[in-house]
Every structure is written in C-alpha cells, then in structure tokens.
Amino acid sequence: MDHATAPVPLRVLIAPDKFKGSLTAAEVADALAAGLRSATDTAGRPGAVRCDLLPLADGGDGSVDAAVTSGFARHSVTVAGPTGRPVQADVAFDGATAVVEVANTCGFALLPDGKLDPLNASSRGFGEAVLFALGLKPARVVLALGGSSSTDGGMGMLSAVGYRFLDAAGHELNGTGEALGRIRSIEWTSPPGLAGVELVMASDVHNPLLGRQGAPAVFGPQKGAGPREIAVLEDGLKCFVDKLSEAGIADAGKLAESAGAGSAGGLGFACLLLAATQVSGADYFLDLLDFNTRKDGCDVVITGEGSIDEQTLAGKLPAAVAQRSGGKPVIAVAGRSLLPEERWAEMSLSRVYTLAEYTDRDSARDPGLSAALLRRIGQDIAADIL
Image (tube, rainbow, N blue to C red; front, side, top):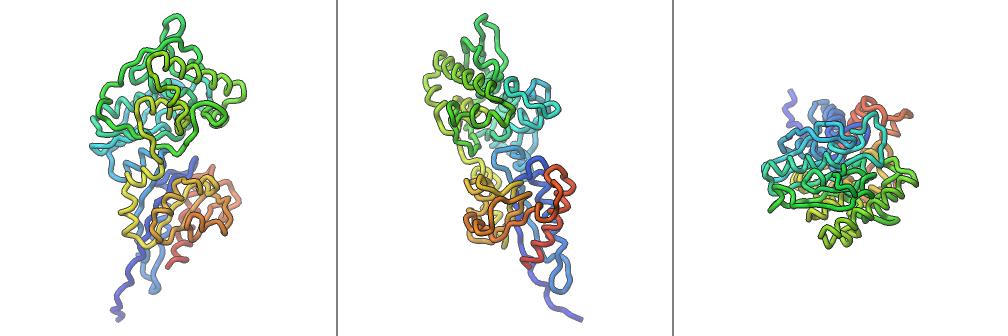
C-alpha cells in the first residue's frame, strides 16, 4: 500500500471583477473555481488546487455585492429609480462603513425596457439610498459612482438630501438633466445625519463637470444623448453651477472644474459639494476587501474583467490587482483581450485567457455559455500551473 503523503495543494486566489452584462464577479469566481477544483494531483487524487474566492469591484455595479461577499451585511431600501419608478436598492454596512451604489439605484439596468433617457433620468434614488445609509449611523459612507444613467449633475441626489431647486414661479423642480436649465433659485441645508460622517467618492474618472472633457460631451453619448441633448445638458449644468454660487456656495465653480466632478453624469460634482473625498475606486475596494492579506496566503492570483484593453492598463481593477500581487504569478481571464501578448508584461501578467478563444459565439449575451467557458478555462489553468 502506498502511504506517500499527498502533495500540498496549490493555493489560488480568484479575484475578478464582473463581466459586464453577463456575469457578476461572484459568478465569475464560482465558475473558475469549479474548473480549478476539478483538477487532480499526479496520483489522480482530487484537491490539487485550493481556491480562495474574492469577488471584487472598482466602484461600479457590483460594489455592494462585493462588500457583502466579504462580510458586510446587506440592507434593502426602496428608492426612486432613474425614471421615478420605485426600485429596491441594496446598501452594504459592516457597523462602521456603508457602501452605496449608483448602479443599483439609478443605473442603466434600471431603465424600463433598457430605454435610454438622457434628459429625464435622475440620480434622486442614489440620494435616497445615501439618506438611508446615514440612518445606520456609519462612520463613513462609500459612494460607488460607476454605472449612472443620468446626467443631472447630482441635482436629483441633492434634492433627496435636503436641497430645494425652484423655477421662476417658485415651484420645486425634479432633479433631471432637463430641469437644470430651469433653476432660478436654490434653498439648501446640510443633509441630516451627515455631521461627522466621512464621505468617500470611489471613482476612477477624472473628468471635470463642463467643457470638452466634461460629463455631457464625454459620457453623454453612452447615456443616449445626441448633439442637441448634449448642448441642453451642458447649458443646464452651467446654469446649475451659477445658481449654486448665487445661493452662497462660493466654491461651486471651482469644484465644477475639479478632476472627478464629471463622473457619473456629474454626480461627482454633487459629492464634492457635500465635502466627499475622491479616491481610486479600484484601490479603495482592494483595501476595503482586504486584498493584501488574502493574496499573502496564495501561490497564484487569478483576476479578470469583461475586456482587457488600453483602459485596463490605465488602472482598472485587473491592473491594480496585478500591481499589488507582490511578484506572485498573476493570470487574467476576460471575455476578450485587445492587448497582444507582448504587452502582458506591462500589467505583470503571466498569461491571459479569453472566452473568445473558446467560442465563436457572443458569450457576452449568454451568461450560461460564459459560465461554462470559465469552468473549462479553470480546468486549463489548473493543467498549466500544476
């Protein structure tokens, strides 16, 4: 009888972002882990790979889910969706830090029938979720700004937390991109529960609010705005800033020019008005989810997202993961990669696997196919690293 000691399992940290429109970060991690765990050692015994799953987010959709996966409690609240219809949103809270997400309050996925509405979509629901989070008595609130369907400069959010925006007749305006240009006066007080609470704006967008690099010009088209709508939004946001200055917010103009003011359709500007501090979404969530400790206990790191491209190199989550991995082998998995193999070293990647290499079908539109391909890729990774 062979009494040889079984080899020590290879320890793999699976730390991906979502595959946007297809799989959540948790689903990506689960599928890869299923493939990796099916590997056997040289004697044919199971358990050759031990997986540690850490679904990640960078401030976009999935930020609350990532926090919950790491141990935060999930709290649900009904808020106004981007077109005013009630939606259920989630907030993550661990007793000190609350995470509030734009994507699950006023994001693209909440638009009825997916119909873009650039002038009428509102960020009010995000503000309602922030108020709910403040009611939990946190020390800090993380404002995850990715995925907004609106370009209202945060007018909707501010209207939910105590600001009143009035037209020429003294009627209160709803917070939308179309309403920005009709503001004639503003009444404001500090939001209830905000005193002493740290606001952290998690975003990797550095655009200002206005101008050629501003929210309407750069991000308006992806929210459905054509040239006419972009002009309306640009003029409306200029009016918004002017009226805030007239209402006694002296630094409104300076804040509008700040890097990050244009994130999430101008929600970044509103967050700055509330004295939020902007941080890198990728780095902040890696810290929040204790990535450094988790990677110290592994031999190999697997990360990924829907597309590996030039934007990834500019500091998106997989790049941040690779940078923090301390020389451990880092493997990336993506739906597709636009980076040739000779450029993998720029992100310290040892290998990139893509779903596109395994199928001619559009896996981005087929979550079941994506998951099946990731399981197969997990098997192939195991075969390569064992």
